[in-house]
Each structure stands twice: as structure tokens, then as C-alpha cells.
Length: 128
Length: 217
Image (tube, rainbow over all chains, first blue to last red; front, side, top):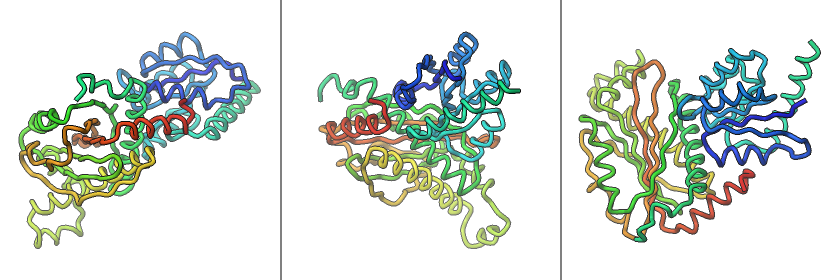
């Protein structure tokens, strides 16, 4: 079950958009951070079920934040939402443990599908 | 010009515009990676609003920090119009050329001087980056732009070289800048766009339409 969702992006508009794109029929708790470092701090404090992570951010990039999150919890569900759509970037973050990569600006369907994939992944983890 | 010109866009509108540019720069990096196989490390773009009479000074300040620059300049015209500059140091241009040099191209050195080949290469890279970036920006703002051919400028650039009609006193200049770096190659440069906006109402509406379309409002 997904309850806590952390959104890490330096753009307030991107965070707002993502939040609104998430289906409102579930009682999610939203948490936000504006750079990789504060995103990592939030992650440690709240242990989110899903983290939406941008890559190009000040203070600490999403690449670094992803690595740190995976050191804390290798099963953490991280969905990268990025403008950096180079193949090497996608390969790199998937290799680092992101569940999937969505290019910006994300569509409602992409977000909804991503959450469904996250839910299935978490269910699979619990059955183990 | 209204003394509050720096606030012509609200913080939210600036943030949305920055996000549009972030997506546009991302598209440019992907195009470059696809075409010439170089991986680009993107940085957070900066957005600044300037008065038209500040533009010349701004460009000279940005471009004169380093001596020996190679600049690709290209103009675009649509509802949003302006100038794009891709700036590389002379040394970085040479390094870039050596990365792209293929065995089969060696023969061509007999016909072109190294300097000419360097110019052609850097101009083509500039054309790819600027075209991908500006076209994506225009697409997200539901605009359509046409381009002048790219122009190579070696050495120094003066803001006085800008066409006088590009930024008259009734326009706003929204400057967008990003630094890009080629991974493991010690090559970096920057790209900046100086947008002249004749119709602020149009730009604001285009930004809000974008925000609405993607659920931001």
C-alpha cells in the first residue's frame, strides 16, 4: 500500500504539477523537498513509500540523492522525473536502482501508471 | 520602462518558464547525445529579466570573462523572438574537434584548413543545440519559430553587433543561461537565450496555458 509520497524537485511548479497529477481517490500524505540534500533528509525522516525525484537540482543532484537513498534502503521505490532524457542518463539511474524514469513534463497517465507499478513492486516485496 | 520590470513575471511564472527551459535544454542534450554520442551533464538554468539597455552590457560581461572564445549565434523569430548564443572557449573547441575526428575525415584536412574544420564543427554543434532547445521551448509555449542560419564568431563579441531592432525599448528581455559539460572530456561551455518579448500578455498566457495543460494550475 502506498501512503507517503515524497516529491523532490527544485521547481515549485513541477512539484505542484506532480501532486495534482496523482489520483486523489487515495488518501496519500505528501511531502516535498526542493533539492537533493533536503530530499535525502526528508527521506530519512519520513521513510516514504514512493519518492519522485528530479535529477538536475542545486545543492545535491538527483543522481547523488538516488545513490544515498539506495544506501539507506536498497528496496526504496524511486521514480525519476527528469528533463534529462539522454539514454545514458536513463540507463544510469535504472542501474542505480530507480524503478522507472519519466520524462518531463509527465502526463497524468504516466504518473498513474508509475504509481500502479510502484504498488505492485511493493506488494511483491512484501510477499517475499 | 516600468521600474518594476524585473517583476514583470511573478515568481511562479518565472519558475514555470525555468522549468520549460529545463525541459528544452534536456531535449538539446539528448539531440546532441544521439547525433554525436557525447553525454552532456546538465546544470540548473538561470532566468533573469533585463531592461533592453542592459542587454549589451550583459552580453559583453558574459562573453568577455574568458579570452579566445568561439561563439555560435543564431536568431529566432516567432511570437517569442531573440538570440541564442553557444559559447565555448577556443581550447574547448579544439578538444571537441579532436573528439569528433574520425579516421575517414583526415583526408578532408587536405581541403580544409584545421581552423575552417573547427569552425564548421563548432557551428554545426551550435546549430543542433540551439535548434533543439529553442524549438522545444517554442513547442511548450505553443509558438512556432523560424531561424536565421547560425553564425560563427571567433574571438570577441560586442553587444553592439546585435541587430538594433531586436531589442527596442518597448520590449522585455528574458535571459536564460545554462552551463553544459561533456562528461569525462573536460569540455564545458554555456548556452544562453536572450528572449525579446513584445507581448507580455501573450507570454504570460502561454506560460499559464502550459501550467494548466500539465495540471500545474
